[in-house]
Image (tube, rainbow, N blue to C red; front, side, top):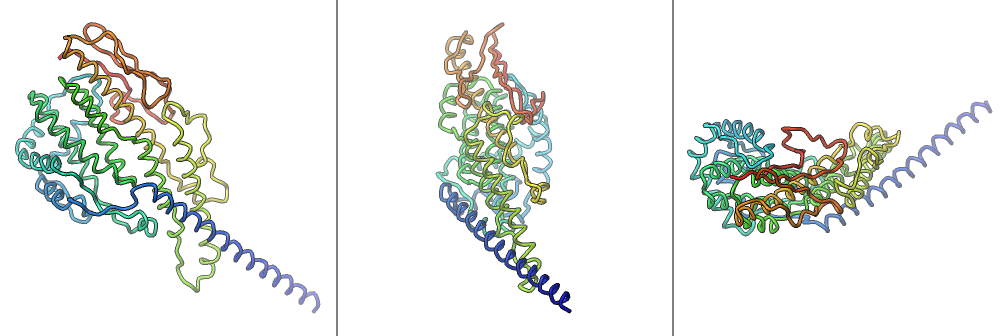
Length: 422
């Protein structure tokens, strides 16, 4: 009897200690999660944490007239079949044109030419509308995204990518026709639309603006002639995509790994509320914190200064107990790499315009160029030489292992270019 009572006391003691430990664990986890939320709120104060809809209803209508879907309404699909089919040809054409490493424009397929002719008035209408705008924005609230990231509706910015691709082929078509005024006008609208996206600090609009800028930089240097006017304008449209993408990635970490994602299923579900929930919150917090530490590391680096093959990142060292972290920690650093790559793409385009401007004035490419030091990579500079009446540009650098430099790649294109006499 005494042994039985002793066993009961031991079991009760173990259960009591277990309950105390669970209560203590919940208390610690809740304190950590509250600190995480407070840090998120503080970070949101350093960026544009909210915006209202401004001028986007009329912009949506111009998109619909062109046969594209609205940006402000994810659920409404107003794509016209004709435009949808044209975009198939446009995408295929740009996949071929964007990697071209000299000032040469591939012949534009007849299907695209016919589309541009038929939609010419609609294209001009939306260009005119953008050029007259001082501001264009879409509503968001980072605090609401933090509270309920899964149900927060993000505008359909993919339709802006489609519009920008139409702008790109329109520019190339006008370049082949020698219509410099229309080229300048469409480029201005394209850059201005990108400027309206850049203040939206979360990831999707940052990536849309990033992709568009990469297209713009490559197409500008593929056309001739271009004047120093656009060299000056590129400085006016300068944007730090490295920091913009890192800010967006921080927001992504705060919202997608928010402890508020782990809610209570039932007040009577003790296993969930006192064991599963705090454990899941601990895993979420660990993933989010490691991502934030990783992004903080990259704020001090550039694509030229970091060797990802020889650096240990916080997001690489997930502890054994974080089962969720082992399978769900996203690799978002590729977007930071791409942001840096786009900024180098911009440097290459500016250098090409400098040489082209001298050619237009003097009749030939200069033997040397000033301003070839890289703005992004300290201590690095662009190589430039002239041979057989052509200018050659190159940027030699050891890049991180996950940057795939492939011929024909539309993302990580080798940073060299041949500028030919028109």
